[in-house]
Image 1: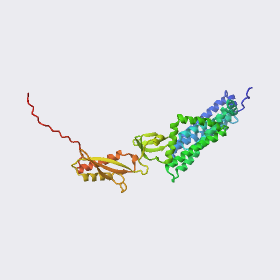
Image 2 (image 1 turned 30 degrees about the horizontal axis):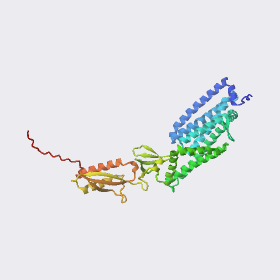
Image 3 (image 1 turned 135 degrees about the vertical axis):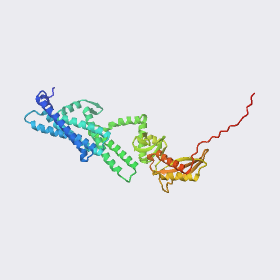
Image 4 (image 1 turned 30 degrees about the vertical axis):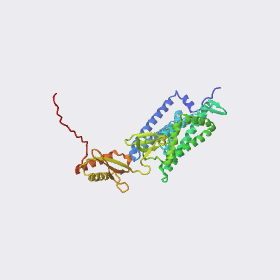
Length: 427
């Protein structure tokens, strides 16, 4: 049985494919597009003069201004040609451009709440293509026939019938539900992170837990909405349990460890820690790993399980202040008490060193060594994330200058060599 002819815009467009009016409409679309591109680029160049953020403003002009101008010019050209030429191509282009504008407006609003993240951009792009293609098929009259074709490609699994159309509907609804859940989680996370009465680690734990629950709820609501029985997911749940017991147990352990770390607040963002010979500042606490920034600028990604099973030295767990020891050796001929006084004054003079009664700057005699007397200058700093190499260098240089002024000698190894004269007789 033959399908009836398509009485839609596509049929008219195919009928006009050999007519000169089609070339005229293509030329009009190209001219309108080029003019819109030139005007939007010119407006984007004016944004810095208007004291607007250049990057974000330029992106918005390209995203909204270009199709908006294109739609305006095309609609004006369609009105001018109406009644004089066949304008079926322009009739298709106008609603498609309108759909593009609506989609980009929706994406900009969505990014306003969810943030401009790589994962969010991926979902937005997928949803935009699905909506745009579906709208294009609808206005051209091809959507019902395509839906019947996709619905005919199906298979039965027990009492359930699964078709390609059902799969596409599930993807669309699931994508929309996940984006909506991300939007809600972003709003909730903003409120939680602004709650000053909660510990920062507890805020992160609550935000991540809420996001996980919202995503699970989105899946549980979206699948039944398109007619998929979620009880069949029990099979996948069993397979997932076997996978966790065999090959995914490390991954599951990292996720569980991440939530435990966030809840017990043993490690928090900004802490200076040492774990497995790695020393640095905790920059991010993720559900699977922790980002540690070393003093040389490198970032170390530590699985959360490592923080649970290894000994972690938290240098700023209860207080951010840490001690820095600066050893110096002087000769036995030097004035010991004067050397200690000069070292203490050099430590107090440094701007990073804390100078109060709670964290005093002190110099101690640590050892009478073979070549000299070992002294140790003890100072406290409140910014260990800036490193200690520059601090030690500055204090060593100040101590060296003061020692030279006051005649404090720095020892070096001495070796006494004795030569005995021995009478050697010729045999």
